[in-house]
Length: 147
Length: 190
Image 1: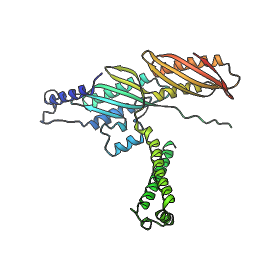
Image 2 (image 1 turned 30 degrees about the vertical axis):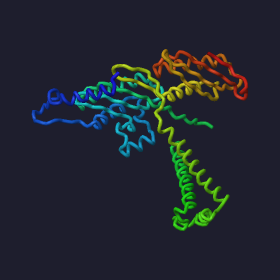
Image 3 (image 1 turned 120 degrees about the vertical axis):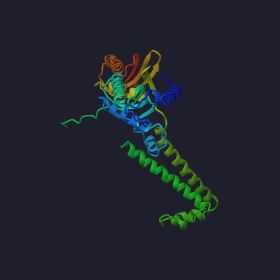
Image 4 (image 1 turned 180 degrees about the vertical axis):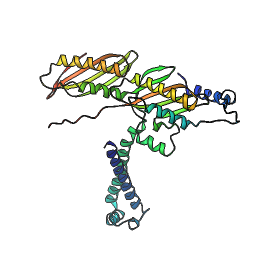
């Protein structure tokens, strides 16, 4: 498993390699920087599209408040945090899954979906996706039609 | 509804703290009862400001008590939102980790137990160890249930559901049953 220090180092290395590896295909001088928030948004959208994923994030009142006030640096309140370099990214995701779906299957599809979208839309590879299932959503009891 | 209740409780807690603070501030002559907005409580606050001796001590105790009560109520509402939930690691590989909230796994087990017609109520807890999950459930059964059969069905169902949905081997399921209206007798199935 990758430690936070490894990720930071990786990110630093990626940044150093920006000019050499991440060449600009247009031939125009300049650098493209994709903000972590954008990478997180792409990943969040990709995860939310997977069958069995009910929502991202905790629904935690305090976290939502701190997030809204800008004190949640990792955007954990929204259910996804990202450490993105130029070439690759590491994600920490919190999910609520639907009752009856095997969790390993849902997580595998989430990882595939995120990796695919991050590669096609941001041009990055996904190095690691850590998934926390924070809740299982059970279907509401169906009311009987007879008394 | 849960959040509405929590919000009401937080508001009540804040009101208690404010009331206690006002009482203490009035008694300490930091604020004048006449300066308070509105005039609803002016006579009461004036009486508090004028109190002496035992009455004054009682008022101080009431003020401190209200603040303590408010802080406790506020703490009870906020503590569940502050701590990280206890997580169960179900896989750890190059692709990353997968963890599940322990209380979600317990809910899954409880729902599985509750789906048995003979069960009126139940409570489950899980205890992860290196080889898998150990599950303990207390189930209250309707009178007339065949306890060994029901307990066996519950054990099999829990093992099947948790292994299939969570993906972690279940090594042990202990079911302690009680019959409804017969709380003294309990039967243990392992």
